[in-house]
View (spheres, rainbow, N blue to C red):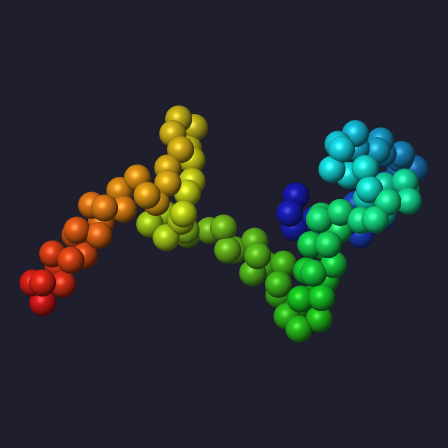
Length: 106
């Protein structure tokens, strides 16, 4: 769904004469897109930022999408799988010792 453009979704909605329900999330209570006269949301702020980036780099959408691929987990501060949560501090001391030992060998 990431690669589906919002404008295409809105056009499909209008073509099919659909009405979407307003999100009940308290974080969108002040969202200007929700027609409630509010002051905006972080989601809207990010959409505006990406729109601005598109002016200098038309490939920004694909770059963002590709950034989640081929991630080196040794460079991630934290991540989780279905069973465990991992933090870079979990084995930080053992990696630090390894780096010191290998530098002394050089």
